[in-house]
Length: 480
Image (cartoon, rainbow, N blue to C red; front, top):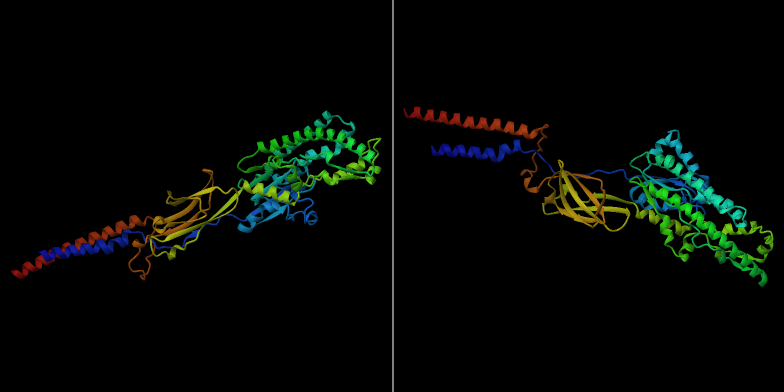
C-alpha cells in the first residue's frame, strides 16, 4: 500500500514539474529589440523677404536665379543644417527680396485653394521658417523719407500710411499666411519678429572732408538738422513696426513659434550692431566731390541719399544671420531615443541595458524620465539628465516598449519616439535551449492551456485510480 501511494505521489510531482507548465505557461523567447523610427526626415520651406533669401551673402546671386536654391549663409539654412545632418532632410527657399505681406499671402493662397502645382509636397513640410512684414514698413519709409526731411509731408500723413500697412499685414497674416502654413497640424512654423536695423544710426556719424573748413562746418550743421528729423521719423516708424511684431506675438500657439529677434537685437550694443547689421553711417564720408554734387541751397539731397543708401543697408551680415539662426535653435530641440544593447545577447539579468539620446538645438538643462509600457501598465524605470544611461536587464522583463518624457526646468516639453522590445528573465528560460521552440498558441492561449492541462491532469489521475483498482483486484484474486 505504501509503495502504491509513493508511486502515485511521484507521478503527480512529475506532472506538476514538467508536463503542466508546458501547457499553462505562454512560450516567450527572447527577441531582438525593434526601434520604431519616427518621421525625422525634415522637409523645410523658407518663406519671407530678403532676410530669408540671404540678401548680399555668398550664393545670393545663384539663389535669385533658382527660386528653390537656399543661400547657405541665410538664417533658415544655418538654423536647420545641424538637424538635417543629424536626422536627414532637405531645405528649400521660397523667399523673395522685396516681398510684402500681400505678395506672400497671394502666393500662399494657392495652397489654401489646393491649386498649387507642388501642393502635395507643400503638405509634407515639417518645418516652415518665416520672416515677413519689414517691407510693409520700410517701403513707406523709403518712399517718403526725403519728403519728410524737406517738410513736404507732415508726420500725421506718414503715420496714416504706416497704419494702413499694419492693417494690411494683420489681414494677410491672420487670414491667409498662417492658415496656409498650418494646414498640416504636425508642422511647426517659426516666425521671427522684425528688428530695428537703425537703432544706433545717426547722421552725426557721417564723416565730412570737403577740404574746406567752412564747408565742413556747413555740412555738419545740415547733417545735425537732418538727424533731428530722421530720429523723429525713425521713432514713429518703429512704433508701427512694433505693432506688426505684436500681431506676430499674439498669434503664437503650439504650431506657431515666435522667435523674438526684435527683443534680442534691442539688447545689443552699438559695436555689436556694427558686427551684425550692415547699416553703419560711420563708413560714409562726404568728400569734396560729393559736397559739390549736392544742391545745398535748394535742399536737393538726391545724391546724398544715394550714398546714404549704400551705408544704411538694413540686412544682417553673415554673423547677424548666424545670431538669428542660433536664436531659432534655442526655441526648438529634436531628440532621438535609441537602445544601444542587443537584448538577444543578454546572458545575465544583472547586465546593463544601455540607452542613448541624440539632441539638436534647444537649451542645455533638459532631464528625462524613462518609462516602460507593458499592456498599458506604465512603470517609471529611470530619471536622469544624462544623454547616455542604463538600467538592469532584470527590470525590463516582458513584452512592451520604452519611451522618454522630456523636461526643461522641470516642465514637460515633449515625448520621444518609442522602442519596442521583448525580454524574458534568464531564470525563466527553457532548460533545454536546443529543443525545438514550441509554436505560439492561438489567441486566448492562457485559457486554452489551462483547459487542456486540466483535462490531461484529470485523465492521468483517473488512469492512476483505475490502475490502482485493477492492481488491488489482481492481488486479491492471486491470494485466493
